Length: 322
Image 1 (cartoon, helix red, strand yellow):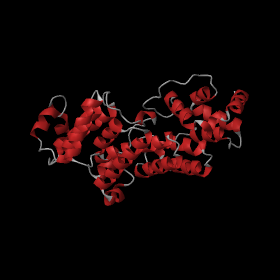
Image 2 (tube, rainbow, N blue to C red; image 1 turned 180 degrees about the horizontal axis):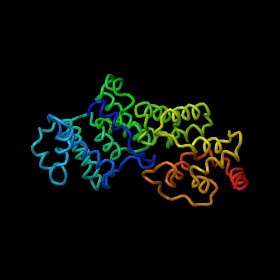
Image 3 (tube, one colour; image 1 turned 120 degrees about the vertical axis):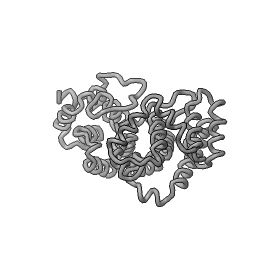
Image 4 (cartoon, rainbow, N blue to C red; image 1 turned 60 degrees about the horizontal axis):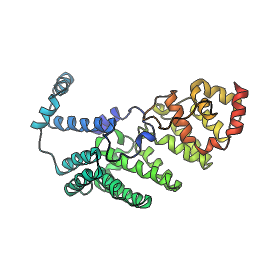
């Protein structure tokens, strides 16, 4: 996929932070990875094809529906070692047990020592502690950077998500950042989240929500303001009530009753969860749309400590503004 195509396809549906937690061997591939694999297959069969018109290209794609893609893959060029490694990595991630995942990941690394997904699968299977897992994920991220190359980062910064080859790297780096956050190494996690936003401004991975929570919990108001400015410049991320909820929950709202009413108009569910009028779900949603109940759940989770310390006053102000 070239850069122009990446720019056109970079805007995807938002996925929640919890929806991006690392995939553990032993469960089916998440739908986003299944889609990614199909996209890779389609890209592979289209390599070398020359179309005289958009209509001709669309007709070719239509023939790939159903068994058409499998038949086209059988006629496609032989896989490169890197492509073979990625296929094995997908199988390792989908393997039902650690015992079956390990050899697949090892086979992938034998073909491509820098196969990021295989390194992550191996890390999840072999890590003996959180710190060990962090160290292994750091090596996976380094492998991705080495494989893509510094020039690649310079040329494609800003639309990484639209390029399939970057997905394993982006996944690994987010997994590392979230693990660092869980381990209390917040400043390191923030650095990775900020870097991910630089690479993927449309934030298809949902790291903006986690980063905002980090800023608010640590009372890093400058960081929260920078993120608000960044969001305002990125229409795909804009949610009118978001800044008001953030200001309200961190206690910096100049007019809390006014801001609460304003935010309520854009997502009434946030207030219900923040004040305990509605119970949180045990499992967070995998995706959300703006102004939805799913967005409210993610909002409450990522604000974490920032809203918890204000819970008493928040309930009072909420009732007063009702």
